[in-house]
Every structure is written in structure tokens, then in C-alpha cells.
Image (tube, rainbow, N blue to C red; front, side, top):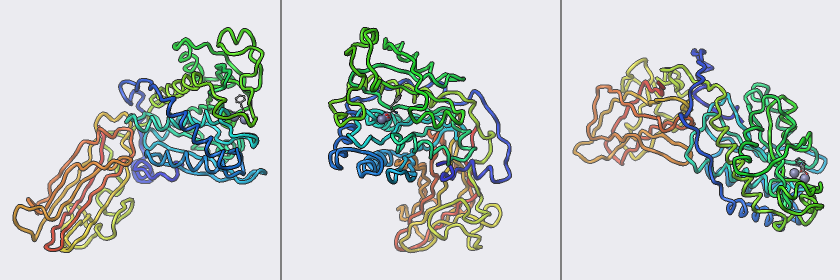
Amino acid sequence: MRTLRTTALSALAAGAVVASTLVGTGGPATAAPSPDLSVTNVTAHLQKLQDIATANGGNRATGRPGYKASLDWVKARLDAVGYTTQVQTFSTSSGTSYNLVADWPGGDAEHVVMTGAHLDSVSSGPGINDNGTGSAAVLEAALAWAASGNTPRNHLRFAWWGAEEQGLLGSNHYMRNLPTADKDRIDLYMNYDMVGSPNPGYFVYDDNPAGNGARDAMTAYYTSKGIPWEYIDVQGRSDHASFRSYGIPTTGMYSGGETIKTSAQASKWGGTAGQAFDPCYHRSCDTMANVNTTALDRNLDMIGHMVWLYADKDYGTTLPPTGANLLGNPGFESGATVWTGTAGPITSSTGRPARTGSWKAWLGGNGSTSTETISQQVTVPAGATAARLSYWLRSDTAESGTTAYDTLRVQVVSGSTTTTLRTFSNVGTSTTYAQFSHSLAAYAGKTVTVKFLATEDSSLQTSFVVDDTAVTTS
Ligand code: PHE
Ligand code: ZN
Ligand code: ZN
């Protein structure tokens, strides 16, 4: 999780700049509107989970191959759209199990909003309502977030838990092993376990009311859609309990299981009185036929609403001081520290002068076919009204004429998208250092990679010498 993510902020924290400013009014001016998520997509996800169960002995239970296959499939979907995923392995008396945790790059790392669902079934069936529905709906919300292009104020994390049916083992394992500082960063955990019951009710968790605006946001959503709801005290019956026990605010919804729908509930919600909300609860008949698509669609949109709403919830965004350089080792005086790329460009060689100090990034200058890069990850703060990348460049060449043989591209990589901000070439070189800068405002709230990429053709060198880089906000 966060310890794997190297951000410029952590580089700063390790360096001389220790001050940070609390700004309560940062973040996007208007919250992104609630999405209308696709129940067609969720049904396709459910069919995939059903197919996985069918191909693996009819279930997706802990210690059985259908569980890991489910996890691998969800992970691949998330990886493909830019999530940073992590698989956490743990052992249970039913065999090895796994959690899948997916972080959306960017947002305020000090304020984490989590949404989760258990991915395991019981061994008696494929677990399509319990909990294919929660797993698939949370997956669709995560995919839709990635596709939205929104930049969250807070950091979004999604989780699919293993071995819930054995007693919340996966979520307990996650929380037990999460460093205290990271636990403290979680502002909200939302849990979705059974959200498409065939004889549905709409039960909003009410067992963690302390300071819990999320419960009220959820009931307000249902009310605004004309959907009656009831509170349910779910106590320790699902994965939110692993968070609640550490004092983290939680909420969630449940569309009902083995208990019987009363006639009062049937008149309010429709369906069949005297019958269980889910007659196939924990049975082999919990298949594709065991889902009420209307309930699934309504709850999917509710989940989307909650994710979108809490992505931009104002928890008091932490912004770095205006003007601080968010790049680590920006003038290369510490060599290659925090920069990655091809070996060689970062040098104190006197063959070309640094602008300041003695180190710089000397890209190109080989006079033979070559590609050289240097790059660094940086989180552009959500709520920054302006953010810029700047750098100083000097160049010289043995080429002549007006054809660009050798180039230096200045790029920003966001997820799977690479944008070239500026291309320099052997045409128009200058041995006087000049400063260039480009807006990064479009990347507010995102973790991106700033990259310098030099390519040379087979003969006659061009040297691009970069020094004194910066990413600053204002
Ligand atoms: N956690 C239960 C299961 O997976 C279902 C449940 C969810 C029951 C929420 C009550 C409330 O079997
Ligand atoms: Zn269950
Ligand atoms: Zn469940």
C-alpha cells in the first residue's frame, strides 16, 4: 500500500522541508456529480464470476481454485485501467487466502476513503448474490472512476476481501498488519455485502453512528430516489467490523439474507412476504438466477454516489506550502537519487557545464543511435489552483540543417497516457541555459511521472543538458 508508493511528498518529508500547511478550502470547486453506473456491466462481471465457479467445481470458496481465479480476474481489470494493486496472502484453516487492495494514484494521502466487498463464496455454491453482487458493484464503481477522468480530493482505495465467510479473516488480516499511521489515515470504510438479493430490502448499516455522516448520506440518497430504507444493526456480520473495531467510521448496505420479509416490508418494497430476502443464501442455488436486477441497479448507483461524494469530501486537505519544489533532488546534486531511467545521463562530468552546482542530466551526446531517459514520480496536490513543471536546458549539436535528427521530449505520464509537453531537437540548439515551464494543472490530484526522453540517430551528436528542475504549486 502506501509504503510502496514513492511520492515527492515523502521525498520532501525526508528532506529539509518539514513545514506543511493545512488548508481547509482546497480541492475541486464543485464535487463531481453522481454517476449513472452500468448494471449491464455489473451483470457481465457476475457472469464472469459464475463462469469461474462453474470451471472450478461450482464455488469460489476460500482454499479452492475458484477464489484465486476470481481475484486474478478482478486484479487484471483494475491493473488495466491504472490502479496500483496489491495482493495480500494469508493462511486460514481452509487453506491460503488473499486480499486484493487497489489504490487510485493521487488524492490526499492523508485522507483515505475505502470501499470494500468480500470476494469469497461459501463452498456450497458460486456465491453470486453473496457476494458476487458487492464484488462486481465495487469493481464497476472503481472502473467507472478510472474512466471518469475525475481527480479526487481524497485518496481512493478499493478492497476485495478473502475468507469473510470464515469470520472476516481477510479484512482482519489487513487491519492487523496495517501500520498505525496508515490506519489513522482512513477516514471512512464502506462495505457492500449482498446488494442484489432476489426478494430485496434496503438495509443501511447503523452500528457505527458516532460521527458518521456517511450513513446519513446513504439514507439521504435512497430517500431522494424514493427508495424506502431501514436501519440494520449488522454488528460483526461483515468486513466493516474489522475497521469499526479500530474506531474508523464505517457504513454499508445489505439487501437481506436468510431472514423472512414481513408483510409490512413487502408492502413497502414489493416482493414476497413470508419468504426470505435471499432463499438461496449460502446454498448451491445462489447463481445468476438469484439476483434482483432492479435492486442491483439501484444499489450500484448508490455505491457510485457514495464513492463520488466521499472522493471530494472535505476532511481538511493537506497541501504542501505554495512554491515548494515537489521534485526530489531537483538539481541532480545527489546524483541519481529519486530519479529513474537509463544509466548515465545524471553526471558531474565536466564535458558540459551544470547551470548550478556540478551535477546535471546530460541526455544524448553519444553520436550514435540511442535512447536515454530520466524520470521521477510526483503527486500534484488536489486543490492546487496552479501547478507547473519547470527546468533549465542548454543544448549543442554536431548536426546541421533544418531536419530534426535528434530530439529531447519533455513528457508527463499519467496512468497509461503519455503527453509530450515540448519537443526540442538539434534544430535551434543554444549553449546558453534557458528556463522552460509547462502547466501541470490538468494533473491536480494525480500522481504522475515527469520524464525527459532523448533519442539520437546513428551519427553526429546532440547534447541536451537539463538542470534545476521543479514542480511547484501556487
Ligand atoms: N456477511 C454475511 C455473509 O456473507 C452476510 C451479511 C451481510 C449478513 C450483512 C448481515 C449483514 O454471509
Ligand atoms: Zn455469506
Ligand atoms: Zn457475504
